Amino acid sequence: MKKDLKRKGFDIEYPPMRLNRFIAVCGVCSRRKADLLIKSGRVSVNGAPPSGISALVVPDSDEVRVDGNLVSPKQKVFLIMNKPRGVVSAASDRHSMTVLDILPEEQRYPGLFPVGRLDKDSEGLLLLTNDGDLAQQIIHPRNGILKTYEVMMDGAVTRAVLDSLCEGTVIGKRMVSPSEVRLLQRDPEDQWIEITLSEGLKREIRVMAESRGLRVISLVRRKIGQLELQHLQSGSSLAVGREQLMDMILHGGTV
Image (tube, rainbow, N blue to C red; front, side, top):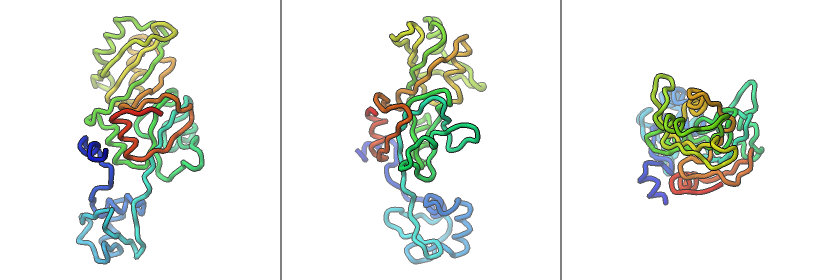
């Protein structure tokens, strides 16, 4: 499984990295402050002074100390959540409850943040992690991880509207086209569609609808890649391993 994920371009383990970045990954300080620590002689690698801020370290084998204290990367955490409506996808917010606020105490790990966008009035599949590198791999369009949504409009979605959605929408001076749009056989009739996107722009689906005289009543993210939301209750979250998460996203899995 690991070989297959790596072949698709996803890092499953910590790769060799620059010393300043390693110190930041360990949660000691920012990269800029790490540069100062290294230059001031407060950092050692395998018991010796490093060659410089660009020195490469192998996290699984090299011993790095700051002021004599051994440092190691923070525990990486991966949560799958069924985000409810009315909750903000953010690490913090002055005015609204966030997805971190609704986590049970045992899942409130340091540094967690939501992966990608899912606005306050939307619900469904959301990933939370403290692994910025993996988050970027999931979000970046070049990796081809599609996101699928089930959307109910306030009026009938005609064939002309479906065709128009497929042709694309100008959002922020960019032409954005979904990968797929289809009508769902669900009550109310002709008001539910499934739409698949390659990237998540702010309020993207709502803008698409409004530009065609429709308004989104309900928006549920159902899939991230091949990972599908089926039975995880609204507001609940599930902790998984990094390799397990990527395997479900790339090859299929349900929560």
